[in-house]
Image 1 (spheres, helix red, strand yellow):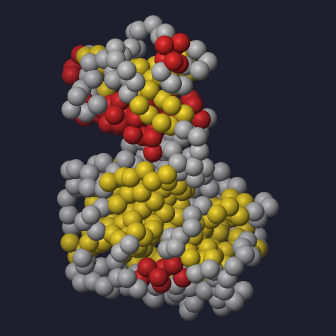
Image 2: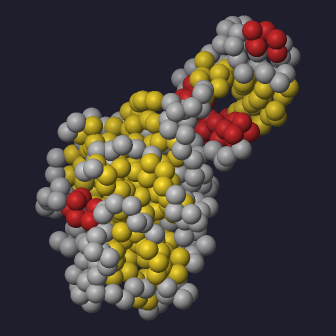
Image 3: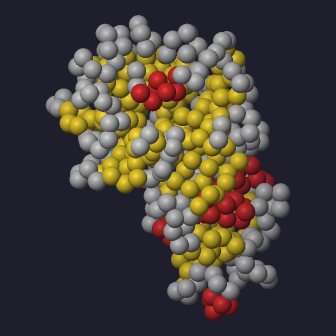
Length: 426
């Protein structure tokens, strides 16, 4: 079993299976706890005819502020809209660098057209505009899409506000696999149990989750459709079945099995094709993660005497050690472009999040612990999501590569085992 898997497993006790319905309101709260860069002042003006019960501009402001790269304000009235001429010198004198305006216009069949325009006040020019025709129940997703568009225009990186996060919440003896928007709204519970749930992982198209459940009194790997709720066992062999990781084809997973003795890595196929054994050692090989191009797998092994991260070339079977600093390095996850990986390292007794470049092995420390685990990248590669601890409570943390951070916590229970969804249609 994995070292971090064992650390997680020690916390779990349980009996019985339960199902619950989707939650209707956000219970998780988000606190921004620091910014690691200079913040660009941005004014998102109230959109003309905006629905006061669900202000799109408030969602956009919050999205951009969470990145740590923007200081969002409301500006001063009278506010311009998407049809108004912009007097750049006036807004520049008010300290604005970026300006966003917009309007909402009724259309046929209950639809609403949402228009947005983006301006660089410092340069005195418009950066572009967008239009969305949607129904009122799509306002929140549309606001996230607007945030994504603004973020990409200003940073050059794809936005991830219109994605989701999966995690496990533990309250009492109950374990809930939950999925929520990145701003903590619309939490849903695809599966719940009084037995431990571990290692949720998104399929490449974002329609399924693989995870480990102990409902059969042993660790078994399941894949569940988020649209239908249908669940399928993909690994339930003798011994332990754990640590699923999707191949980019979406038709197979790397999993850790002990059916032949020690923990080894196998490739299992959803269509039932014969599995493939990927590692052959007498050591513990565990925590696999598949590269974006499917050519290599990072994993953890004690074959060198302590838990370290190795890379397997899938075609040749060659294995090379990747981490050399310290005696405990675990939980590797490739960056979306495959150039580096995020992982947990132990330094002076503190479990911290770090990033290592695959080409030159340079290490960048992201956190200072003391008890961080389960790190993974946002799909744009600009944020790392991980589990941490605040006093006696387990929380989730998101850190940008430039050092800004925000935390997600829930007064109802502990949050752990986070995973950020891919970018795609929702």
